[in-house]
Length: 193
Image 1: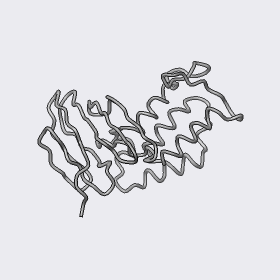
Image 2 (image 1 turned 90 degrees about the vertical axis):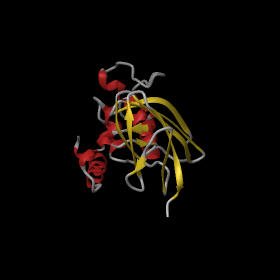
Image 3 (image 1 turned 45 degrees about the vertical axis):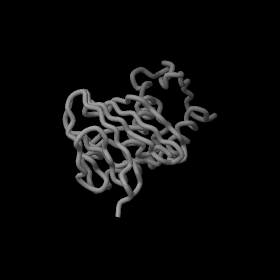
Image 4 (image 1 turned 60 degrees about the vertical axis):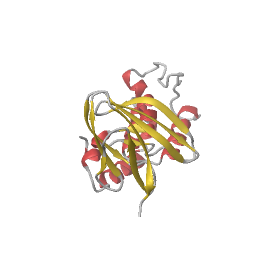
């Protein structure tokens, strides 16, 4: 795990955000899209990230990239790192760094979004929908089996899991032991007291 993933105090995220801000990392030439995925892991506010990314692509200053319809860049001076945009956008929707699945964690709540079958660490395919500021559902398909820990994406609420045995291990994290091929649907539980 990286330093951010293993830090339970939140200090690692603060240090990462301050470093990104201080170095103004958004305007580096080589591999700039990878910075945005790292900013997601550092819990940079999603609306701000989308604005910075759009400015990077449309600014009169600095380098210009041409974003293709598949969210990769035309290879002016980019190779593999040109695919970092896909990682950035997918990570804003679903990621499992540090062993905990986070869905819509930094995505702006005022911006509807839906996605199907994003692969995250732990061999899980995740789908979900955010509509009118509320997460409608999260579907999780296990490709290998094993534990799935998910942070609640329902503000102030736990997680209700349909279709398999699962139990809450805290107010905001649900643990489900899954077999290969298992599918679950997670919904917001009743309000926490």
